[in-house]
Length: 501
Image 1 (cartoon, rainbow, N blue to C red):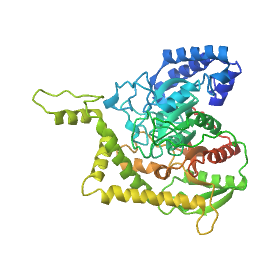
Image 2 (image 1 turned 135 degrees about the horizontal axis):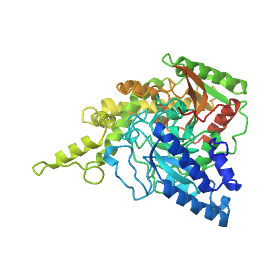
Image 3 (image 1 turned 180 degrees about the horizontal axis):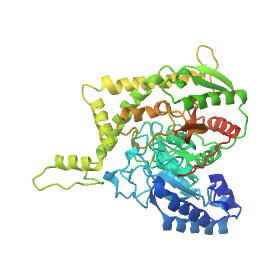
Image 4 (image 1 turned 90 degrees about the vertical axis):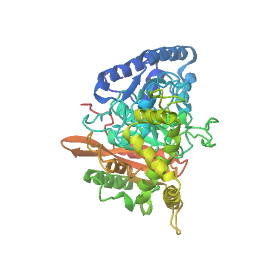
């Protein structure tokens, strides 16, 4: 924390520690104090590694004194957090599910290990919808997280704990995971920056699988620069993940200050949806004009199959979840139900899973199992895969150009159709919650990178709530993506530190 009590950015912590104005132990203790002060209201953390983090910080400080901060790593001494579906070799990895509530991983996920190798100190794990299945963080066995802009409202999901922790200033960066918008949607609702990298850009090894062809780990921060700094650490090929891409990791910060004049930004007709909240519509229109005033060329484009995104996603993702979660049977690891001597193995499986999985996870397992079942595979799963290919083709055409028209460098969409909604408002209407991801799922289906940035505010019931916009770029186009995002946010400096309570 700074002297006036304002939370620093990741860059601010890094520079203060490098310059000797702050030790890593001071930084970690400041974050732990903020968590102690705020988390009783926000429920952003599932575990806080107080003593462990202080010991790690002291070790980093000793290394900084002997080796110099730059040799220790690009994030030397900086306190961070990770979502509780990312494995660490200490504490528990619960996925906020009763079936894993006591699970202790024997290894650390590659993305988390790369943070540690860069000198970062992990102070805790953050709350999420169970197994990352949700858009509000209400589907957590530890109870819902709350939005720091209005604790009566949801922070989004599934990475709602990470979003709330960053927006409230408890940590400057938290890792999230994005399967259909689970980084970008809560980032928008909490007024921060959230990046979903290209599929394969960040190793998934040690990320507890939800939908393996869609999942990606990414950073949640209060500035685009902080997200770029984090990406430079966590990206790169990993021999432990066969889907990690063998591509060079560029300097994601290199072009953040480069003007965007002359770039073509595509605005899909589908962005102006009739169901969007009026303030989402207004902020989006203002963003389009702001980009135009910055010299970008605004191009009307069409993503004709975007409307099929939610339907395709909610077949593909549950189908993969059905397969991935079959391993939780009460035998190998995780929760094991008690059964009588005269009861059989099938009863053990059924009871363990019924006791361990919450309602939303059970719903998606059943949806996925049905879609994959004999007689329905072609009608549902195979059809969804065809729709997925058409959605990717739409983006390919827009980025590369079609019928002789020049391609666009990025596509602009709202991040969410509404500002933050009240906790409990949509919990009994699964479809309403699923539609919160209407603008985000297509990026996962297409495998392209996206970033949500704060773009304005909505006035709802006397509260000032953040509104985000989303930029999407071609695969492995994160340098240009972050350049546009950085220039956009620099042109409209907004508060990203939420007034909790």
